Amino acid sequence: MRSGNQSFLEHSPKNFILLGVSERPWLELPLFVVLLVSYILAVLGNIAIITVSRIDAQLQSPMYIFLSHLSFLDLCYTTTTVPQMLFNMGGSRKTISYGGCTVQYAIFHWLGCTECIVLAAMALDRYVAICEPLRYAVIMHHPLCQQLVAVAWVSGFGNSLVQVILTVQLPFCGEHVLNNFFCEVPAMIKLSCADTAVNDATLAVLVAFFVLVPLGFILLSYGFIARAVLRIQSSKGRHKAFGTCTSHLVVVSLFYLPAIYMYLQPPSSYSQEQGKFISLFYSIITPTLNPFIYTLRNKDVKGALRRLLERMGELC
Image (cartoon, rainbow, N blue to C red; front, side):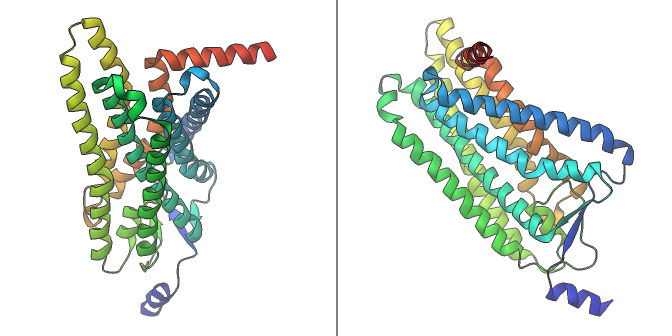
């Protein structure tokens, strides 16, 4: 047994077993159907948002630049995890290679941190639009929007790189079984047989920076927005102003609440049984709902989609 553990310490494992819901076989088929339908809806919905944001002349404001990037992030987010989950649930093998697992959690954390900052940039856009409407075009010019998006992608990549460098150095002893649907850094830290104090501390600091700082900025922005809206005399004006922010607030809540629960606890106290279902929520349910939240609440997006469908009908 000791020599076996030493070999694990010296060499990276070839594969990890992803349990998913293997202990509840009766759940696999209905969950497979839910995931498949959700994934199809997420792909179609986010591609539709990206398409209309790019080609419709009425959706060229900064708000829709950020929205198209958010949809692209959600599209990549689901594609990083869901096909692997569907493959595992549809077959008898529940494994993922060590390299595939590393790539999966690297991309997953890159996209997640990038989305945190993009959501904060969207809050800034709403703040300027409502609190500084006369200077909106001057402040939120296209180069600034592109710079904010670039900062989001680069900083998210930097966070992911640090996490990967620290996690790949961890030894994994005994059975390489992850009680999860896909690979995540907290689950990998929990599985390691080494001292993970450095990993725990690094994860906590980076999560505080990439989750709490953008969330604090979002809440502060909406505090100023609420104060400005309450000063509007017209009830119709107040309703319109709040309407432009509701969709974003719903998306922020769906994204941040599960992430805070997952990542603001030490990995040493991380419960894989609870964590895997929360991970399932923000990896597939949130990206699926986001396009519908924005289309149902936004007249411009609904109008753009209608015009796109009319063009497609004419071509057919």
